[in-house]
Length: 489
Image (cartoon, rainbow, N blue to C red; front, side):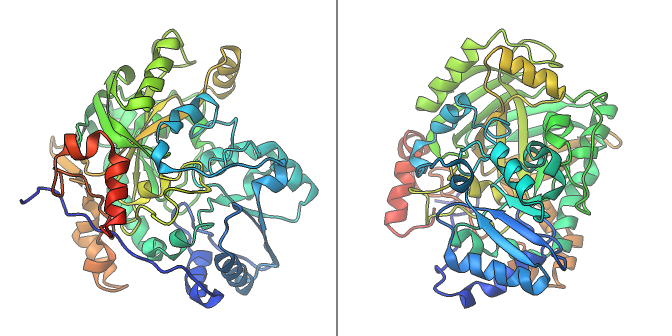
């Protein structure tokens, strides 16, 4: 049977057995400037602090230390959340995708200042600030697996020291070809997307799992969206996501990796997304098929999703009368995240899917170009008012997610009336632009450099089987069976 979507594939990497197996990649990462894991320019005299996890691969750690010291660093230290807090955290598994709702209820949602450590789920921000007060020699910090703007914010007086995330406790993540993409090429790929945003008046998104969403923008809203949508490796394709000061304060960065600051006097853009978001995956793992209906940006209906869906609906009903400061009307869950990552070689890890030190073990798959992770909850613009309101009303902060792999995203240009296709059935179209392919030839074969190494299997969409019967009811069971059979997932 012929399918309209690209067939499944996945890379395979070997676990390192020595520093030598890691040193070349460590050199690349220590010099890289673009993306959420780039270490940037290491300078003479730097004292580097890496916040990692207890399962940090020893060869990766030693290779990174060696590479940074060669670049001029005086010291590189790896520190673990348990050392700061005295608390420990257990392992997570993608079999329990519903736990993203549980973590949201407990204040561990993406963007929630109450945790400040998405990797471990432990509240380490205060302890880390105290550690840095006692050790002022550290001038560059690499920490956590996401929420870069939040990291800079919660470090407060030490915010200028935060450089980027650290995802390389896991050897498979480290060995990935994901991080080999040249900075110059990444910037130009992302520029192809960002350059059109200021001229957009309408956006539509569809996906074969059922997503069908649209929103419109005024000229002023489009201009504001474009100004702060560029976060290297993680583009903000939802206007509210891009224009909230609480999310972008020192965290959004332009193509030169320089911070972009928004004034709280400029109101955020509520795109008013209307339609349905559907899927079976989030940052924590997988869940039965779920449909979420939004009207003018607000979640109004939840169907399916098993325990994940039930918990979301319970929260939606419980907090129906919430009115976040600056928001247009009552409502607890708002569409506030359409994140587009841009790295063609990223993939879904299998080495720790079912026993991960990451509190969000399914996060790696979102890094691949063309994958959209939708988020719904709230974002902070009027920062103190928002946090005070949440505290007064005992409300969870942040947002939770649904992932889509085969999105088609179209944007209508105001100046011409033409529609630009940004993503085509999961393929980021910028990768196929003649300018990008020409630039890629500087580094090798563009067919290889710009191809996807990973495409997930979804029965009835891009591989044999029936979506409803074989996948939608129990996606993690389907993936486990393929993994055990040696088939790509």
